Length: 277
Ligand code: C2E
Ligand code: MG
Ligand code: MG
Ligand code: MG
Image (tube, rainbow, N blue to C red; front, side):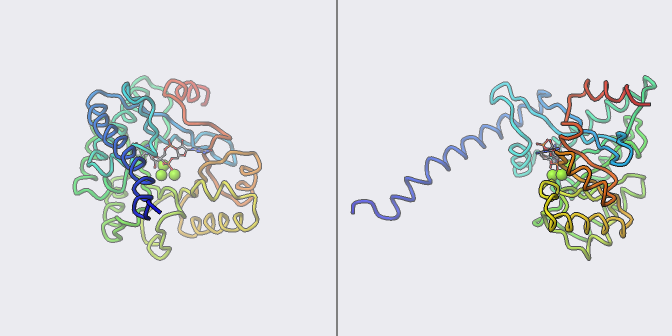
């Protein structure tokens, strides 16, 4: 045999790794450029009250259309922004767009509802996060109840003491925080119990299988846990009427998902807001 194991590995891995590295490098370059050139936009996805079907608020999601690379999904650019020290800047770009949106509606005397922004754990644990966050919100004269924070649990970064301090500080100033994608990451229940989150967002992967009895029981357990901890349960990724009804049955108050609304452009969200009292 002329090809030994090593040759096979090289032949198999090298082109793929190269391509991946190449793509990442391009994204890193374009990310810096895109942040400077205001290439990022927000989409808003309604959070729906599962009992009354009313819209309780929105979640802001970053969107990026790079003139060079085309559309790139957050699943691809968020981790890269996290690894290259760009994430705080990116989160803040999105935060400012949300604050501007809220401020404009408020100034015009139009209805406003709370909007949640996603804060990367990398950003969340930065020394100046709380101070910067509050100063942005104050600058746009938005009352704390209209801006909320979603943080995903992170195995690598989890720091109980720090998380508790940050969340308590935020709460002291009137800001509510959610734990995002609950159930898939590191969720030590004994810690959760003492962290001042006001909301638990149940990960889409659980809602996706909720028709199954075992999964139904898991989701119900999380909903009950939230209730015991005086936290508000939100189901992510509801796609069917059946999923909606099952969640309603177990008393989950809020939901999000394609069944109700996909994330939408700002003008569409405005139209939707204008139809409600
Ligand atoms: P996430 O915060 O858990 O947001 C929910 C994701 O699920 C969004 O994906 C949303 O479009 C999608 N989704 C909502 N309903 C459904 C549904 O019914 N079915 C399915 N299949 N998907 C649904 P998206 O917008 O691609 O964002 C992915 C993740 O990227 C977010 O997950 C969040 O962790 C992160 N992300 C997005 N924007 C930002 C941001 O401004 N800052 C930070 N740090 N992270 C962000
Ligand atoms: Mg989120
Ligand atoms: Mg989530
Ligand atoms: Mg997430």
